[in-house]
Image 1 (tube, helix red, strand yellow):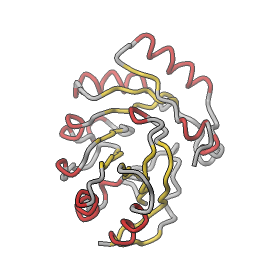
Image 2 (image 1 turned 90 degrees about the vertical axis):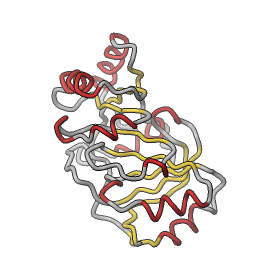
Image 3 (image 1 turned 60 degrees about the vertical axis):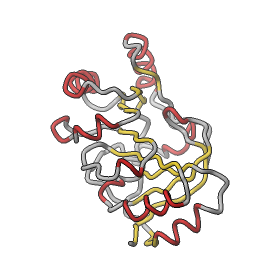
Length: 208
């Protein structure tokens, strides 16, 4: 199995429940969505085998691996997940939640970041999600969250993340914040205490 790798690196988790935890990141190229605010350059990719990927991972002192994208579920992840399981890694998946979720027994933590129409979301992966990260700043985000909660009644941890600048508006890796979104997210969380504020620590602190 050959995977299209956008980037691989060892760093601290910058978002969500595991913020600050050292992990190895495998960023796969390609996505089934075309979000204008995406911070991944999908055109770049390097073909790598499972063996080549694993040889990179094992050289770093962590037992946690994040598989992200893009949208990782457009790829057949099973060969990579099985190799990681054999080496006793805890595997974190980050997905937009629109595609079938076929390897639940091989994953340790599932993060869903919904960005598309509620009708496109896969109910099973929402049910299985350990955390769900919504974006503050996309069109009609408050209504979207309200309808999402009503439709799925998710049990995972709920986060609200202020949308930062996209690639065209600035380098999001450098922590370019839109303060209106930050302040609105803070107010929303105070009004809805089931939500917690999610800031992108790695971008704010320029951690790589």
